[in-house]
Length: 161
Ligand code: ZN
Image (cartoon, rainbow, N blue to C red):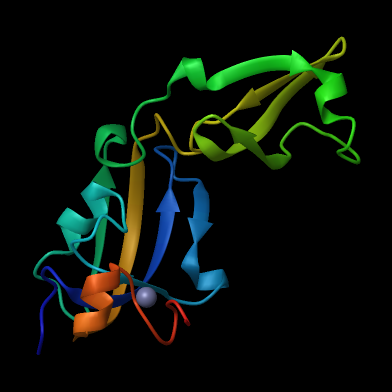
């Protein structure tokens, strides 16, 4: 039975919780995650914890922020005039938007709206957080040469192109 190593295609279920045990996200609602191992498709701490696992393995791993989504960067928080968002209907705190910047398209979240000013935060929502992953490895197979070349999975759960 194949074990997870560089260029394995892995199918898994995961639930990620914060350090208080509150569930933040789970694949169990949307179907399994498929990824190509060893190509920076997952956070480093989770890829490291998956090395050598095989289908049917289940495990729980604690991952510190530096091995997850990194530390928060306060320079990625900006306050702008609400007029900049005049084209957005029902602008509200918690809304996720995308904007064009010098660095390309950036995803950010509205974190505050006060006195005609809007605060937006482009940090990953899980940045700065220590996380706990609960993982079920569903299947493991070798990647095709084309998948390795593209750096992602093709077929079910992957790219179709
Ligand atoms: Zn491809």
